[in-house]
Image 1 (cartoon, rainbow, N blue to C red):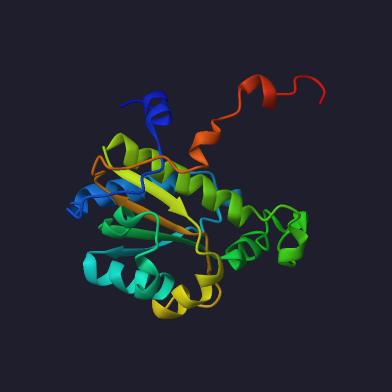
Image 2: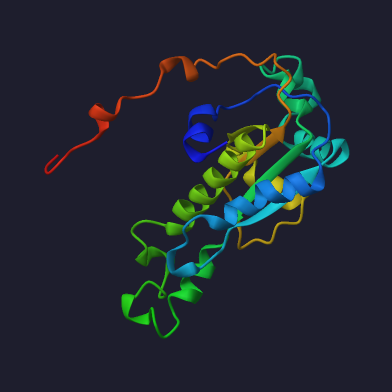
Length: 200
């Protein structure tokens, strides 16, 4: 599958078979995230990979108590065999931009100097590369937010305090029972409506 095909085929999958993902395949998909852009090659994106029912189950115990699961609209999501959690470290950017070739920018002084926090931008680019690689390999994927659970997830799995979690990516084999969310039914915007040529 080439890039154009992967872009056209990529969808958010919310219903999975529980079949495991081969370690070599999983590593190929995760490796794609390392090919995304990174300001100054700060390279702060790292992954917490939860693989198999025990590790994945501990995640759901933190974020979706058993008492709420009978009302959860996407029960097939709970069968995803892998949850991969992208994490970024803002301090990596301060360290990199304090080095001699970047010091003149002033971006190594404080996170507030970054009017656009590139750890989020670069992390998102890495995640997108990984999602496309998953699609190209025939896997389903879903990036979803942790929102108020970020601190609890970080504590449960021993994530160091200076890392921030971007969300969670479910990975697995689609079970064919997926249904579109209300958001997906909104459709995508046309290029002509989002492109401003020469002037806004």
